[in-house]
Every structure is written in C-alpha cells, then in structure tokens.
Amino acid sequence: MSPDVARAAELLAGRRVVALTGAGLSTDSGIPDYRGPGSVPRSPMTYQEFVSGPAAQQRYWARSHVGWGRMRRAEVNDGHRALAAMEGAGALTALITQNVDGLHSAAGSREVVDLHGRIADVVCLRCGEMTSRAALHDRLDELNPGFGDDSATTAPDGDAELERYDGFVLAPCLVCRGPLKPDVVFFGENVPKDRVQRCYDWVEAADVLLVAGTSLTVQSGLRFVRRAARDGIPVVLVNRGPTRGDDLVDVRIDAGCSPTLTALADALVSSTAA
Image 1: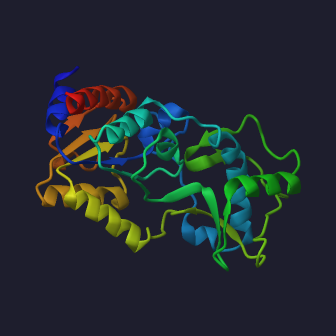
Image 2: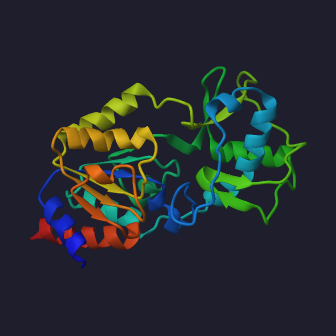
C-alpha cells in the first residue's frame, strides 16, 4: 500500500464517508470518459440543440442507438465492487455518481443518487411518460433494420461516432407521439433541485468525502467538493491526472480507481470487522 493510500485509509476509517464518482470509475468497464488521459476531445450534444427539432434528435438517437447496444453490455469492475463492499461493511454511507451507466447499483450499492440520471430510462418531452431504454432499443431496431456500423468508435455516455445517420427513423412516444429523450441531464440542462439538495444533505452530514474518477471540470460535481471544503470536511481524491478541485483536497492519489479503491476497501472492511 502506497503512503498516500495508507493516509487515505487512516482518514476514512471509522468515519461517515460519502463518495462522489465520475466517468473514470467506469473506464475499466470499457466506457470511455470525456477528459481522462488519452481521451479524444469531443463536443457532446447540448440540451438546447437536442430540443431544437427532429434533425438534431435524429443525429442523437442514431449515434446513441449504436452506442447503447454496446454500453448495455458493460459489466461492473473492481472499483464499483469496492465501493459496494464499503457500503455493505458500513464504511460508506452514501454514493453520488455523475455517471449514467447504472453500474454502481448493478454492483450492489444501495444508497445511490444518479446525479445526471440513467441512460437506461427514457422520458417523453411532451407528456412525461417514462419507459425503458431496452424497449425503445427494440423499437428502433424494428424501424431501422440493419442500421449501424461495427467499426464506429464508442464514445462517452452511450454514444458512438457515426459518419452518416440520414434515413434513421425516430420512434415517438407511444402515449402522445411526442419526442423522446434519455432521462439524463444533457450539457446545458439543470440537475433537478431536489436531487442536488439530497446530495448536499449527504455531504454536510459526512465526516469525509471520497472523490473518485472525476476531473471535477463541471460545476455539478465540483460544488460538493467546495461545500465539503467550506464546512471543514476532509476530502480524499482518487484520479489519474489533475482535477479542478486539487487545491481543496486533503489527500490526493494520482492512480487508477479500481486498484486504489480495492486497497481502500480491503483496509476499511477489515477495520470495521476488527
């Protein structure tokens, strides 16, 4: 165990710990991130662009249809399992994730807020009807037989890089025929206030904030680190490469999430069992 990991384990042991995770937690599951080392710069579709009309929605759903076909096969990794083990042992009280892949819940974590929603759910922008992404995927398959490109590059958040998407047929809401959107927070869209408040409540009740796999580039995650620092709550951060919150943390571990969280889980679970 490295000195930084040992310091982190000592700081976390016996305290109420809340975790905040980002895309770097899921890269070991084969899901690319936006800003990690080696990531290709990308410009994700904004909410304003998506709601501008059918042309933007066709582009989004064509790419996402291919990407979702891959993303839904992603499996939990050792980082997800480590955090679930911490919660199961009472060493972690709650988890806030910026990821939309649902892998924390799949790994067994129970007290989870999916800050940006979940890609496995779909909402109608007209009537608010919620449906499953799996059901929509089957409908899109029927409407677009044989669509896709096996050579397309997988992109973050269930997206894929496609050269062409003209001719892709959209599937409307089955209730009102309105446009469908994945139930995730797009860039330029606000996280629901009650969801944000629940996360603030968790952070303010914590003794330590454990941050893993995020560069904290966007405000939606950084605000919780700032709140912890403001309230004098120690912050442990695990991430490859620099982050926007480096000046706010007490222990900074520049390493991969899976091995580091596994080491921390082993130390914390054994200490709670002692």
